Length: 291
Image 1 (cartoon, rainbow, N blue to C red):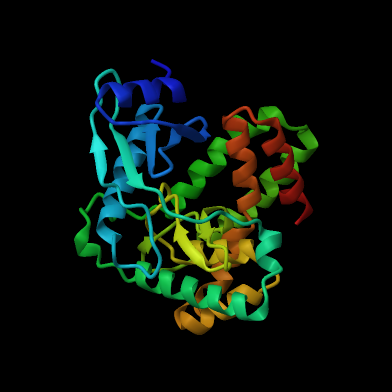
Image 2 (cartoon, one colour):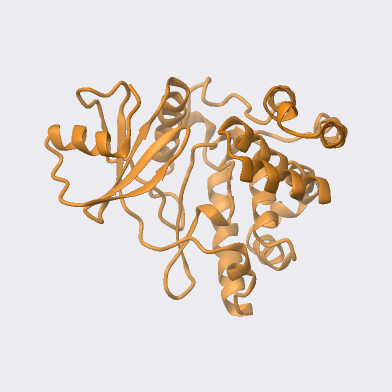
């Protein structure tokens, strides 16, 4: 059954969740997300793979809850709801709003320093989470070369038919060079966020970081992936310099991070191809081929 936001609200209400008013936060290929009564975020996966991903995310969120210097979603509600195929996750809403990269780049030197320090502390703590808190399956390396080879295969399957032949040749050649570099990288897998960028940072009215969202890509892998997200958030390097001051180990990850950063725009285009989003394809390819 295809579950719309309205159906999700109806099912939750029938399960005796008192929803007086709600607003849609997101409805994509993978999840429906609503804010109920201005206080609770409910998320429902739309297919089996999304449900598996949500289950892994819940495990990570429960393990790290209370350990990090800023709030993260706390899945207080994980429940089977009659009429829905998969479990619903609910967590108390975290105050704040996302800011664009341009807004972050315009921060004062003081605000940028504060942000860099808290992001550095956040990553330092997250990356040091004991692996023993997770099952052996959950500890599998999500940034192995097999992951990147699957990315290349997916690009050939989903993206190649959507772009001009000449553009695909450039994409394929550039991606091949990146994967060749990645195949030579060495790192010790740790728990990393996996999508650590401006779109998942929440800020209060004083431009202070108030929360970090979306741990759907979280898992064990190269911590440099998170550093790459910092570079993408502020390409000038001002934020990265301040992160390193709070997380000195990040300095040795920067070269790896820049290699991963090269693939971000292509990944954006690939998600667009999978979701039939022509604008995302165009934006991603334009950025990828112009770099």
